[in-house]
Every structure is written in C-alpha cells, then in structure tokens.
Length: 83
Image (cartoon, rainbow, N blue to C red; front, side, top):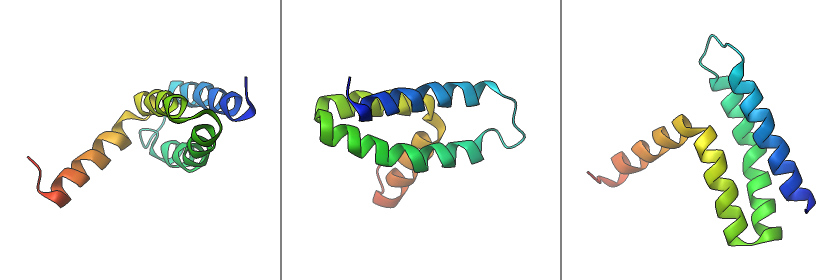
C-alpha cells in the first residue's frame, strides 16, 4: 500500500471518529479542517494511484462529508441555473 493511500485511510478513520463525538456546531468546524487536509491528500492519491483510486477515495470522503458536498452541489446548480 502506498503512503498517500495509507494517509487517506487514516484520514477516513479520523473523520469517522470525529463524527462520533457530540458537537455544538454540528461538526462544521471539523468538516472545514477535514476538507483542508483531505483535498491535498485526494490530489496526492490521485496522482500516485490514478483516476480510479482517486475516484474511490473521493466517493468514500464524500460519503462521510455528505452535507458539504450537498451544499456545494446546490450552489453550483443555483449559479448555472440548473433545475
């Protein structure tokens, strides 16, 4: 297993553990930190492992951080005027 993939798996475990703790702001601060760390990791694992591995890691991360992805998709739809 490569180093970027190992770090992504550690990131996924950490994100799941963070999600188990109670939070007053519904985990938004933790989500911002996870996104800031996860985007460079995603680029690194995609560069090292290829598009298929990068897509699988992105799908796993999007399943954990689903609300930021949903809100970003809504914003893109609103900007481009899609229904």
